[in-house]
Length: 259
Image (cartoon, rainbow, N blue to C red):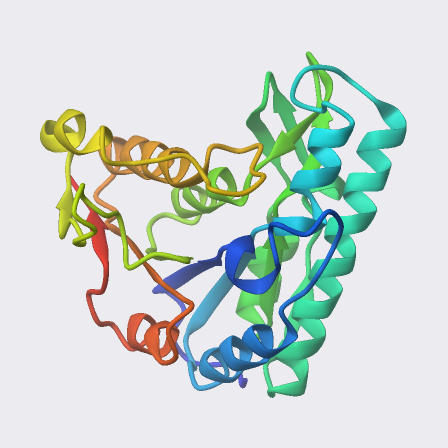
């Protein structure tokens, strides 16, 4: 992927851990075929892009085993961090093999939280990466926390934080579902603050091990974002071939979370 003249528009794409790993596995199991397919679709995009990926079975089972949501555990923190770094390396290598100038950025090395919410994230390097044509690839991680010692940081929190800090972006959340689904399995086209209470009852937690809130957590974070900005986000099925390309090409796909 070459450097482009587009210095204003930014796309942030999150790929869920449920797509690129087997979240039901007890330990890290990557879905290499899916990672390769998605990397190929991303390689066709020539704009400014930040990728964030979930941890899946490389982070959630470990965080659960060591109860990192409930308490500080130094050993568990390091084991979880090393596991998500392994997944990030797999994703970055696949992207590079597809021709994307991808570089891994580990949140534990540049982020501080307070009670599980980001308070600081060093972004100068990411700005420079984008300016020079690189694609930063962040991920769900454990980060240092001023109140808790360390806390689990979901990719679903990283995405809206980056969107605000970079002054607006097109956001896509690639999940394992065709967007947010209603009680009969149909995609809800739009979620706004006024209809959130009506659709919330249809939004479930993750069916597999997920310490960050599953689909309900995603929608909550994106609603907070659109309430404080004009940024619309799209939740779509990244498990279907071509959908990542469709989103990156500018198509409105899946469920829109908007103001």
